[in-house]
Image (cartoon, rainbow, N blue to C red):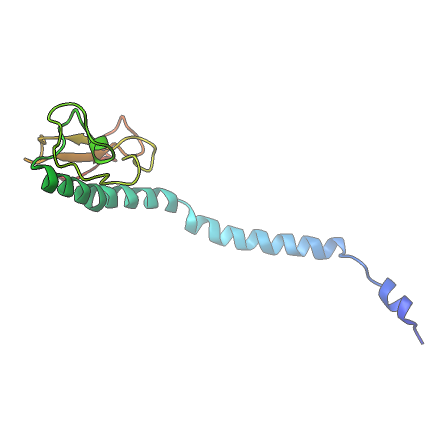
Length: 143
């Protein structure tokens, strides 16, 4: 008959085969999952930029315009939504901040803003996307 001490000392760790089996299973699962997730971060960045342009910044600009009678000028830019502009025309009824953080796109660049717009009568709002030198990935409020 085996005593208790003998039973506990029979097996104290994992064998090399068991460890290799676990590593192979993890590698197989990773091989199936990683290709499905590749490229998702870029899609997420595009979605955030579109949402900022079509909803968040547009709403903040409309609130600014309701309070002050006009949109910020191009020289005042979108930073006029964060702090009261000091250059003319200084808004008399500024009731901000209209946005909580600086208007930076998901790639770390400031959103572009032109008022009055070249493509729309009120304002143009855009992001240069991942590649600032290419117009193919631009996100705009006029397309």
